[in-house]
Image (cartoon, rainbow, N blue to C red):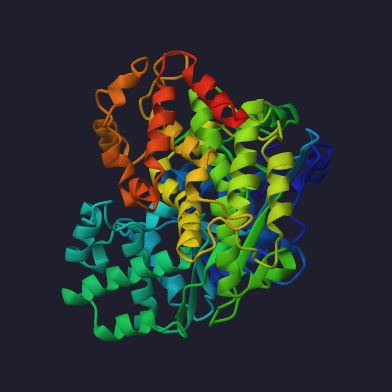
Length: 549
């Protein structure tokens, strides 16, 4: 059996393979989408295929929607050529249950896959046609936080954005410039309202998205590429809204076990590929079953009935509190802690790390002991229930093939929010006179969070706890940080003397100056301990977590 529209006709074969098929008219859905598009999504990767496309499938199954999603890829066009087109825009969704079972479903919530490439005349003309349609209600994004960045960490314009600013909408290359050019097409044609929705895993994502798009538009206005009226239309949130959201679902890279299980069930051509941009992706998505999506309900042109598919529709403040709960306390900091120490200690599965008493205790202290005193209750999800599910069910699930090496990607971009916000909350408690009250101790009493920061710096030396060279995950700050750590040698703690201050005092990296916060001496001491030869990472980790240091 092959996962194509023609292949779906073999209903008996799919039933025998225990694969759920779409229970709506896919052809009719695609015809309706062609005539009156409702939703375009930028970022055609796993979180989209394994979560958002499934949400739309649920609405289609209930008869609440007639149209599917148009998936627009802004970065890796091989995904469209090699994952979408050969499979008629279908995805095999494999949910990995804690009992080891797999729930398999073919997802047909995507009507079309298209390249968001101004250099592809035909594809871009199709996108412009869709943006000119008054029926379009929302565009959304999962392009990662760095997809919104127009400048480097020093505030200098990225070369691609600089070229876009000079060359104007017709030659846009950066994702934010491409989208702004498409919004310009909408302005020049129907001028209908639209919701522009970031669904990326970052705090205040709607604000980040709006700032980037408006910045592009203003740079074009300065150079005469667009009129001031376009910028005014774009910044009027009664016309163009930028709702905030919180998303949570772990969709790791395709697992060999899943590929083999699908082949064993008689399903052909499910092998992963590596694209020209080094994306490791498969015709299937494997993911955990828990999922959360919280969305600010501001859609000036209407919206799908998301709440009927399990989405929390609420106000901006509730979204912000929910995001802060997850990103600064209940999930993301735990992930980063496991990523850093998992790599150093030779782990290749997050679930295996949760069987390590030291690592399990590390994330418990970060979440329960150090995070909970300053967490904000969002009102719709209880933080303690959420974190218990993470620590007791989600992270230990042995059937989720997530790797610390994957999570360690771009750690420098994650540290300021995942740990810096908690540190700032402790500092703010001190400034407002709450410091020392029950539940809000002195910031200098933190142990696990500083230990993760020290562990990250030790990780950047690219030597594991056995003293062997270690491959580091990609990070935009990697070269600079390794340059600042040059001369520091595992096995020689004294080689670090006086060398961490420029890093620890950088508020961009940590969200605050750790020297002013009073945490630098503790981190330097921990880092020195982590350097003391083979086995030092384990000894230092155990010592601080057990309270013997």
